[in-house]
Image (cartoon, rainbow, N blue to C red; front, side, top):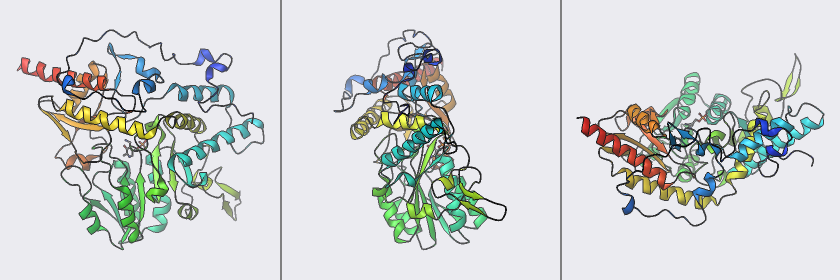
Length: 462
Ligand code: PMP
């Protein structure tokens, strides 16, 4: 095959003549020279276990991220906003440059070499996503802009055809707004009902309430594989099996899960599974929807246009087979190229070792944060990803985020698009540190030291 390798494995942008001029700064050259940050005393650090996970080193991962070598407000960047989006390894950045430098073309349409090559790359991306999710075939994968679009697609296509008056859509209170609002919109049109599944005090889905709410009226259960606000990882496989006893379908929102632990959609027996590339080290604007083949094949188009038809006439128009039938218009080709590079990069790690490292880092962070006066971390379900949402006595979340930003530490403050989940704790807003494989215990120490300084400064001024 003569297709340029833009997968991030082989050809980098540097192999293309003139490419140096369009390359972003290399990993070692920071946009701003780091100014040494003052040494921080980490009160609890000596008491905490050292983080060593066999089979994975965050330092090796960090080397691939140019952005982690920049400074913010005179301090080395500490990126703890991975729940919002992850940073991109140079393999992804270079793959995008290589694609636009040597391989750009529309797909499927032209009969020329470039179109063929671009089509091969696009379909290689689909095959890689299928493998990553454990799907049976690349044909089970629809490319979308992200998780939000995937859920809207299911609501508008499957939902419109399968929901009717009196039908129930069960949605845990835990969900992101993008796994609530699309169901509300289609429920209004079809006169179905969106029924919230309550949470327990620790932020887990109340399984007894779930079992009670399920009935033969339940058409769909929509659950996150990991919560973006509490980190909760629900027992999705068991919940799916229970839903199937009532012939209900299950949609799993994998936006926060895929970067943290291995996923197998066939093992889960999920009917739909959605994720966003940008939370998985890939570019924004690209994501994927998996659906079981028999469900996908019965799904009607939700948008019309090019690429999704077999033939168009004013008396009759016929549609292409899935997944193309659900992908109207020109897709995000470079996004797929970037996603393919991200998957190749990410799957080169021992995924179980990555998950074990992140769990150890979260335990470390929980213990370290507990030493900050006035700290309240919300959500303590037993199975969780490394998301720490907290309030700090005496400071609103926006002030906390602003203070940390001055130390180069990026956390998010606000409602995290999960207002019902925060309301469960009587909150409208909170600060959130969300960790990824490239975060270290030293960065957690810096976070804790900065928060302690905020509390000390506060005491001095009172
Ligand atoms: N679901 C969850 C659990 C999320 O965390 C997010 C993003 N914060 C989304 C859905 C929506 O993802 P996107 O904005 O990429 O479509």
